[in-house]
Length: 91
Image (cartoon, rainbow, N blue to C red):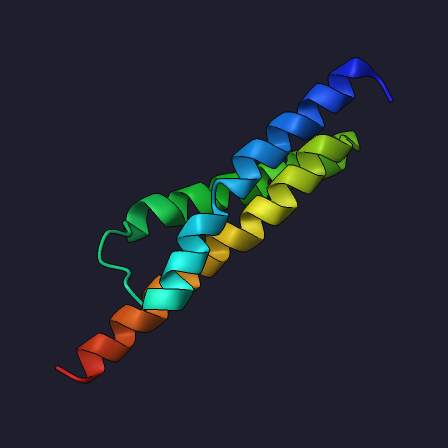
């Protein structure tokens, strides 16, 4: 494995894992008060585009990082939308 690929995989691991605490926090507490739907919507779209880019290039670090990040960011987005929809129904 090239050194550049290893650096890419390490960077991808760090940035991707940074989303795990947010997902765990929402799942444990149900608190989505500080989540910006606009930010997560644009971010999730951007990550999806990076994933497509990585697939086109066949770049494993870009593919893996963006696939996992897309799943985690989409989870935050979906959990936030669901929670806020339920809160509106009960108001």
